[in-house]
Image (cartoon, rainbow, N blue to C red; front, side, top):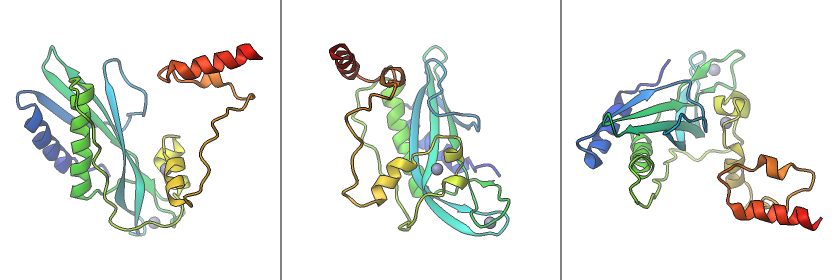
Amino acid sequence: MDLDMKVWKRMFQELIREVKPWHTWQLTLDKSLLPNILKPGWAQYQQWTFAWFQCSLCSRNWASAQVQVLFHMHWSEGESRGQVKMRVFAQRCQKCAQPSFEVPEFTEENISRILNNLVLQILKKCYREGIKFVKSPMIKDIALKGPHNSDNCEACLQGFCVQNDMGLAVQSPIALPFPTISSPTLGITAEMPPTSGSTREEAVKKKKIKK
Ligand SMILES: [Zn+2]
Ligand SMILES: [Zn+2]
C-alpha cells in the first residue's frame, strides 16, 4: 500500500503559499529516491520521525521513532516551478514469518512539523534566503523501549538508517564519544567526504609528513 499523500500535499501547499504565494511547487512520492544521491541543482532534507505501523497479515501495531522521511527539492528559476520528491522508508512485522513492508502512519502533528522543516529548508537551500533554520522537534506518542529492529527496517537493510545515533540516545549518558584519534590502519584520507573542512585534511597531511 502506498502512503496517502492527500494530507501531505494539502499541508505542503498551505505552508509554501504562506512564504512563496506566487510560486508553483509540487510534492510527489518517489519510491526510488536515495539519500545523498542528488541530481545537479537538487537539495536534500532528511527527517527521522515517530510513526505507527500496522502489519497487513496479523494486524499487529507497533511504533518506531526511527522512521526516515527523505525529500529532494529543486527550484527552477526559468520555469518558475519547484519540485519536491519524497520517500518514506517502510518497516515490517517482527512476529510474522514472511511479512511485507508496511508504510507508516504519521500523526497530523508530525506531518505538519516535518513539512514546516521542509519549507524552511526550501527557503534556505533553494532560494538561498539567510534564514536561521530552527528544526521543529518530532513528537513521540509513546515512550519506546528496546532496540531498533534493524532486520525489519527498510532503511537499515539498505544502509540508510540512523540506528547508531538513536542508540546513543537511549543508552546511559556516560556512553563514550567517538574516538577523536584516528586509527593509523584506517584509510582516512580516502574516506573523507569532500565537504569536510580542510583543517582536518591538513591535520592528517601534517601528521603523515611527521611520520
Ligand atoms: Zn504480523
Ligand atoms: Zn532502521
